[in-house]
Length: 419
Image (tube, rainbow, N blue to C red; front, side, top):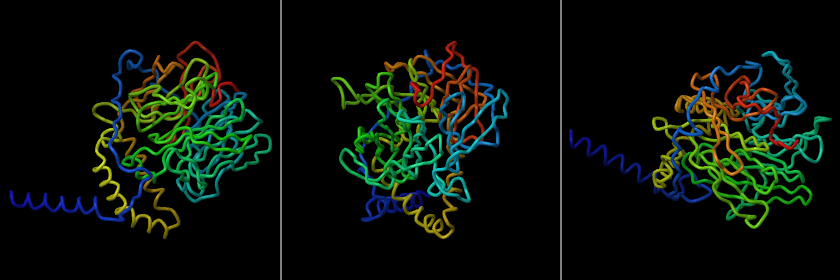
């Protein structure tokens, strides 16, 4: 028995070494595998003390919308992007059934809404300060400008074009959050530069960009972000905050003043993975799309200190994915959508049974939080404050959620709170 175990261990070791050191084996990641660490999540105490404010969330438009990731509002109309690449305008009449009007589409028609490279993946939305336009971040198809009067669209930045990096220039991979300044500059994130399937194991490669439309110049502000996601401009536009989803933190980049061009941690150790950021005059709504705790830890954080292990996993994934890519090419991109569905189910099953939205002020202090434990609200990716409600978007749900606003203030804010 002992000899058998030793032999098995020896065989596994040999296989692991071959996978790890065999020359030329994919993947070739943007940055080398190096050791790094992620701060542990804060304890649920003080401003993070558990409550039940998200319990009993009301479902709206169930079965009529899928994946309303980002929500912004204008004239009591909610704008969102849906799976399949459709931009929609929603008018709620006080009931659970509202009016939905599709007014533009970034991609082409596709057989499956998970065929993102064909029909698009709408992630970030922002109203334009330079006209009646909607600025759209399509994860796979680029940054778009959509005229809300004519519904005409124009591509501003393609994911295929070479974009600047602090050390390595490369194309985009997954455009995500977007914000527009009062001067018309567009800020957006590219979540990673490596294949999405290697995001768990590769070193951070996300970027924050600024596009000066007046001069047609794109510059990289931050590089090496760990799954760069939502962005929020400060009220005076002297700094911008970006969510690093996998690192469970928010990072601050100074745009003006003596620290212009410098960055620092804004909030660290969030008890979950932050998604879109919704700014207003007092602070930022930060939804945690996946919650973590001691029993359901952050897989990214577990693997971060072990570069050799991550490299081995990446190479093993490359070997396993080769036949999948081949089959996918034969069946017109129909295999990846199935794999993506399984991925979503896996994420939902292995996250903490808690839904959390954090409230952060402009000094980077967590001042309050909303929690839910009855599963009526889950996978929240965005918070929209409109009238007496908080509307909650999600990449995973086929409905819109809302709860009564727990605060006395009665304001309307979206991706551009100054609109």
